[in-house]
Length: 155
Length: 107
Image 1: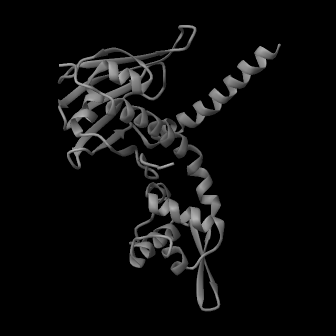
Image 2: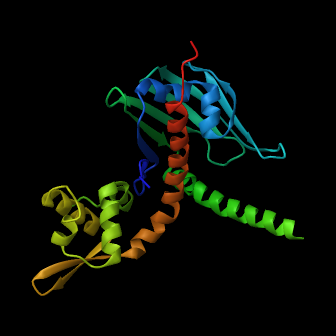
């Protein structure tokens, strides 16, 4: 498996830099961030609101199969320049992390390839590290939940 | 002042991850490591130097040759949580890419 996504999180720093090259023209890459229906598909979340403009807001919401909301996040858009950049805040609701500032840079490499760089800046190094550990913790939880599901079906 | 190398930055580079993977199998000389890559010997030496500075690799003198060993202790702490984070994004971006490859403008 090719490892395309790179994650940089320097020791003691308070940011995370994610870079990824895409086999897509930059306009299509940007479209995937602009069109709420497409965002919903690849992020795996419902898009409640997405105002692509300066001072616009957005909100995502994810529910489990029973319809309970398990994740909700929102933010404000500070800059929105098609095919170039998005600057926004991001905050998970009911989480102790507070907002983070995100700089998304879209870059054409060739006519058919492009690059995305996301720099997320957190309030402190400690908050950054907690965020970084989330998918790891989720992974354990999900495995645990799946196990519980299987066990409960055995009864 | 000597720049202190950072483990996170060290493994963010795919070539360096490949070097770690190689050396993890068996201790190797710099020449043997470089033979596995298309990059110049000099480039690989630089990568090895960075990995050594942040203690992901350890040197051992064996006669006239220097062998590099993998030091798994350093790896465990970061790989444990940075990898799932990276995987989460790679998963999303793969979806994004395949959706957009099929995308047809509505107009």
